[in-house]
Length: 330
Image (cartoon, rainbow, N blue to C red):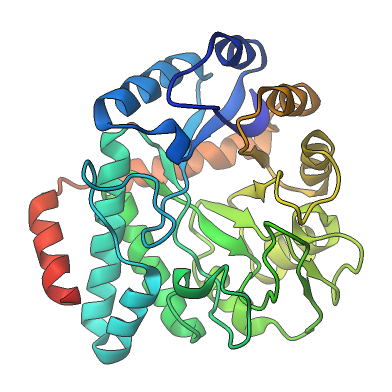
C-alpha cells in the first residue's frame, strides 16, 4: 500500500484510473464535487473503490459544512459553517456544544451512508483579525478554549456516526494573510501557543492534516508540510499529536515543486501520507510511482484510528438529530 491518497477525475472510475489503482495500491481516495452526482451513483463508486483498495485503505471526503461541502442538497443535508455554531456557543455554551455534536453526527451519517470512512473536518484553526478569509467562517471562533471544545464535540459526533475525523490545519492556519491555494503564507510570530492549543487539546483525533505555511520561527525554508523540524518539534512534540499525519493537497500553489517531488519531500519530513487531489491522470500516476509504501508505524496509526471509531459508533436517528439542530440554530 503506497503512502498516498489520490483524487479521481470524475463521477466514474476510468479504465486508466482503475489500472493505476490496481498497480500502485494507494492508501486511499479523496472525493470532491466532480465525483458526486447523486446517492446511487456515488455509492456505486465507493463500493467499487472499496473492492479495489488494499486492506486498510480508506475513502475520504473534504466535507466541513458551510462553503466546504461536497454532499449537498437536495440529496444530502445542508450543514452550517463552524462560525454559526461558534456564535451559538458564545450565547449558550451547552447549546453550542450540542449543535457541534449534532453537526458532526449528521455529517458523519451522510458520509457513512455514502461509503466514506474519513471526513476532513473539523477545522481547529483560530479566526484571527486581519487574516485571509480562506479560513474565515470555517473556524469556530477566535478563543482557543472554545474552538477546542467545539472541535471535540464535532469529532465525537462524527465518531458516533462511524466516521473518522481529521483535524486541520495543524499546527494552525488562522494567522495566514494569504491563501495557500494561491501562494505560500508566511507566519513570523514565535508565540503560537494559542494556535497550538486546540490541536493539543484534541491530539487524540486519530488524523490531522498539515498546513502549507512557512513558520519562520521554526523553519525559515520549509513550510510545515515539508519541514522535518516543525513536524518533530511542534506537531509531534509541543502539540503531542501521535496519530496519522496527512499532508494538505500537494497541488496547491503554496508548494513550488511538482506534486511527485513534494509528496516524497512530505513523507521524508515525517508525514505519514501524502495527499494529491487534482484527479489529473498524469500527475496522479507520477505521484503513485514516486511514493514509497506506508510505513509500519503509519499503518498502526491508521488501524488505531479506525478501531477508535468502531468503539464509539452508536445507533442514531438522523431525522430527530436534524430537527434538534434546526431548533438550536433557529
